[in-house]
Length: 247
Image (cartoon, rainbow, N blue to C red):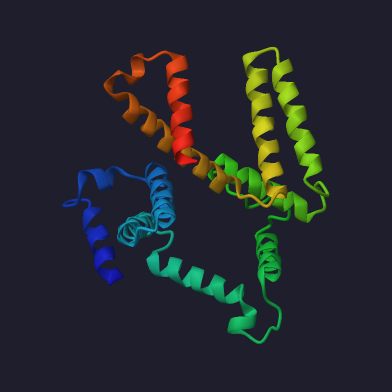
């Protein structure tokens, strides 16, 4: 099956007869599409739309084939190397399933990952946390990595106090640059507090976005075409009505 997709991509990238758009792309230009497709997969999962999930997984698979094709053209690796690499990794990280080691579970998985990073010369606790991750997700991963070294609050009270402290520092900031820096610290502190409360901050924010979108659309439906012209007080009243209807 996948050979057909590989053949299609090779033809699209053919220097003489390929697609002009596909030929103009490189790793950097395609990366944003790869990220977008991953989020569309997550969205389909969130909505439980299996037909959409099938389509979005295909779009994501195309990104893997696209990157692999460009790498093959440059003489770096090809799609079979990608498949072999992830197959080897999964077997290596599950020695209790594919070998004779009795150790297993998430903690051992993390130990093996740490050993792999060390073999690559990445010995720092924070090495390997991808810079390209969404900032909220990367903040959580950095905090988890630091926590494994013992650099962490013992309970949720510390992060909560830090959030309050950072709000005060935002209020005290004297320049736009200082405000931006302190708000960044505040967001980082909120992620840490969420982590200590057992909340996935990325999922929580997605849910908040969906809630806001739903209520805002209901406000627009209540007011009709004149919504934008309403006063702020009128819009606030509609918001409360939408909130009450949902709650």
